Length: 364
Ligand SMILES: C[S@@+](CC[C@H](N)C(=O)[O-])C[C@H]1O[C@@H](n2cnc3c(N)ncnc32)[C@H](O)[C@@H]1O
Image (tube, rainbow, N blue to C red; front, side, top):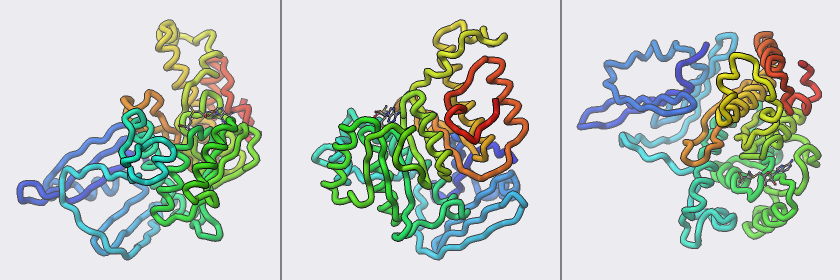
């Protein structure tokens, strides 16, 4: 079923001495909040509107319910002591402590533990990236798609095109802070990045669990991981990152693409009536971006990944704010997806770079 919103959070809030229910709707692009009286809440309507995952937090623990494709409910209860918070304008909880020494070392925070204004956008991008990584990771672990990380077998994450490794270190530090054993690898073509990042890891005393290499993604010595991430890997380096993840069997994949040139360069002649859009340079460029990411998503769906395309952060922090989040389910490809892929590539006369980088993808 297709739900109207990707996610809805419901919590009790105290407003003017009465308890209301605050509903926060997220459609993957924007969040809207409504406070309503519990009497006006159509619980059963919401529960039966097609959601596959439910989490219910009480002061005594958390219950999670997962509805499988066959319609069965998998129920899990974890006892823990949680505190009720009825404040209605709760500030977004920070995931990364601005005074964590890694932020100083990578150059995001200053010596007073404050985020440098020039790095604020990067800090926010990294936080929002983690906000989307963690629930997807927890559901993949709960669903048995990724085995529960242990000290003997930590979760493996590879950051492709890691650059100054803001995201790489952040993922390592945050996951460790929530008690998840993890090994993180950062790959970047530039030897200077590798040397700088390995030196930082050493100075933070975490070099055993985070390592950096200087190599091209397509020829990387590390060949697989549970989770592949990439933030703004340039142009077809994003395709290399996706192909690396798929070819190595990564279960979870989160990539926020950067500039898109590959398809744009191939868009010599637009099929009609799309000329109405592509005759304007700026719109042709956006159309190229959309085609690139839509075809990446289509390829992933055809080879057995469940795919979401999300605006992971507001456009004021970066114009490159689309994320492709994909989980390997092994589901059979849908003939509609294959037909759409063929139609789009034939009509436009384009061959996506990604299609040539995955040997198991044979649709032409
Ligand atoms: C725009 S930067 C983003 C860096 C980092 N992920 C961030 O968000 O701050 C892109 C990075 O990808 C690296 N890169 C580009 N093509 C690559 C390739 N084929 N293999 C490995 N790294 C690549 C570049 O050296 C650069 O550091």
